[in-house]
Length: 194
Ligand code: GLN
Image (tube, rainbow, N blue to C red):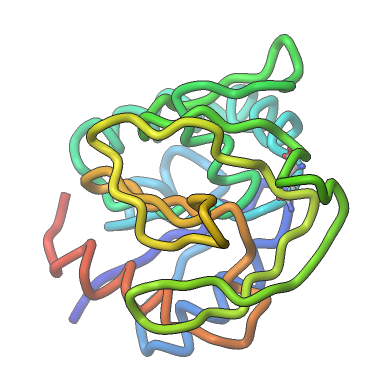
């Protein structure tokens, strides 16, 4: 498979994502410019600080370029801050913070359950139990009808998908377990060039 998976590398936990993707034998490219985006078939948006990433996306010219690719069907996986960037509604965001509106969810920053700091716990997914690392995680407060809930922590959705967009409120790249990246790469890309 000649798939190239990009990892948005403006800020945040991109290196661990790149390692996870590489561990699957898939080519990885760190993406910092619109030109680099042209060379990838799919994109991972890491955790970090969504308001900072929003600013850097705008100043680098990547915001519009990524929005266009997502609209054309590029498989995209956002984790934590990356999920916030993909959401249609961001609650408790900075006033100037932008998001792609690529998945119909409302997320509240830094507000997962009653725990606003970090915690680790088991979450239920179709691949079995997954070790969820939550770091000042966003909480999904609403999912639209087109959104499929793939993973839950108790009753709460923490892993969601809408078409070509996958989003997790936790950090799968820090769990030493590439099953979710494998799901993204195998199920969502289906080896198509978009
Ligand atoms: N709280 C961060 C934000 O709002 C997300 C935290 C994370 O990515 N670990 O962007």
